[in-house]
Length: 115
Length: 116
Image (cartoon, rainbow over all chains, first blue to last red):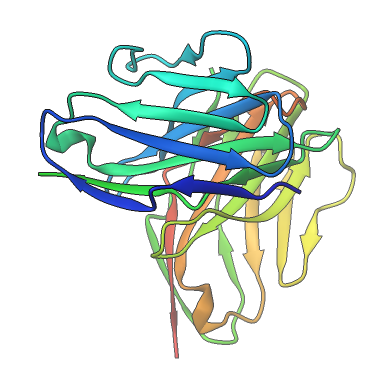
């Protein structure tokens, strides 16, 4: 299994500012995933972060808005830049584990409110 | 393109009764995995159960079982003996391929409410 922590757990930010979310895993993992969950919605993948290379972004998400760092195999950050109220969401970090792909763990999430 | 559908936006169940949450999926990849997660109001995603596409038997984890019907492309979650603490959002998800580096795609979710 993998234990994932995220900081901060929640924040209230003003529009136009940026927030960096940290994700720490208790074991080394190749891929880390960042998801967004807008209010009342399901989870949508923002990007996949592989250590040592640029993150791969899903359609509708761009690096200028959601820059990601992946400095080592246990840590990643997601920055939400130039925030607007539409960015108010829960942001979740996730990692896969296990040889058969049958394990996928999530961090506790960062609940962001933009005013 | 893969797709996950949960047709029940909300459901009620009486405490101690069983409930089935529906999930259908669409993929052309013969190798895939299906996941169910519980999300209480706190927002955390709690892993419940997993079924691989080549698994011969339906997965079970305590009070949770997965009714896997491959030909119909359905992976319904069955919760037996519902408890008040089961009230939450439930998400079905799929991963194409078995690698831990492959993303999960989620359904729209079902809100389950357990009545005392």
